Image (cartoon, rainbow, N blue to C red; front, side, top):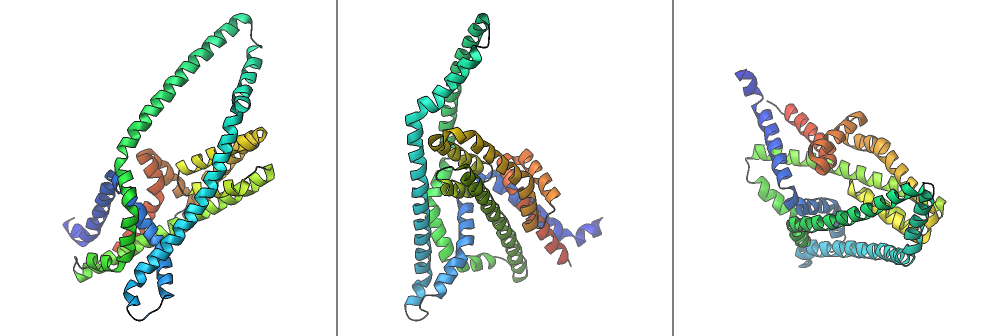
Length: 350
C-alpha cells in the first residue's frame, strides 16, 4: 500500500489540488465572476490583439506602444459593435413595448376578460359566485406574490453588490491582463522550480484548449438556434425577425437564463406587432429549446469536448442537481478538463 502511494503520490496530490481549487472557486464564485469573464474575454481577444499588433510598424519608439494601441483599437471596435447592435435591439424592443402598452387593455386585459366571461357563463349561478370569489382571491394572492418578488429582487441586488463592483472594474482589469499577459505568465511560472513550472504550463495549456473547445461549442449552438429562429419567425411573418433571431442566438450563449430572456423578448415583440400569432411563436420557441436541449447540446458539446453524448446528459443532470446553475454550466467543461489533466499526469508519472 505504501509503495503504491509512493508511486502515485504526485498524481494524488495533483488531483486533490484540483479538487480544492475548484471548491475554493465555487465558494468565491459570486465575487470572482467578473474576473472570470475578464479572463475569458482576454482569451478570446488576444489572437485579435496579436494580429492587429503584427500589422503596425515594427521600428522606432512606436514599438513600445504597439500593444497598448492594438488593445485600444480592438476594444474601440468591439465597443462600437456592441453599442450599435445594442442600440438597434433596444430600439426594437422599446418600440414594441410602447405599442404593447398602448394596446394592452385590448390585447391582454380585453381578451382575458372575454375568455373568462365565456367560461363563466357555462356554470350555474351558484357556481358563478364561487368563481368570482376564487378570481378575487387569486387577484389578492397575485398582488402579494408581486410584492414578495419585488422585495426579493431588492435583496438580490444588495447581495450582488460585489458583482457590480467587479463589473465596474472589468474594463481596467481586462486592459492590464491583455497588456501584460506575457509578463504575468513569466512572473507566475518563475515562482516554481523549472521542472514543476513546465508541468504547470502544460496544465494551463490543457485548460485553455478545453476552454476553447467549449466556447466553440457554445458559439455553434448559438448559430444553430439563431438559424432556426430566423427561419421559423420568417415563416410566421413576424416583423423584426432578423433582430429576434440574432437575439435568440446571443441568448443561447448564456445558459438557462439567456434562452428565457430572449424568448420573453420575442413574445413581447410578437404581442405588439402580431398578437394573433403569439401562440405559434411560443410553440416555436418551445420546440427549438426542446430540440436544442435534447439533441444538440449532448451531441455538439460531446463532440467538441470529446465526451460521449450519453455521458454529457448524465453530467448535465448531476451538475444541475448538485450545484444548480453553476453545475449545469460547468459540469461538462470541468469533467473534460479533469480527464485531460488526469491523462497528462498519468502519462508523466515516473
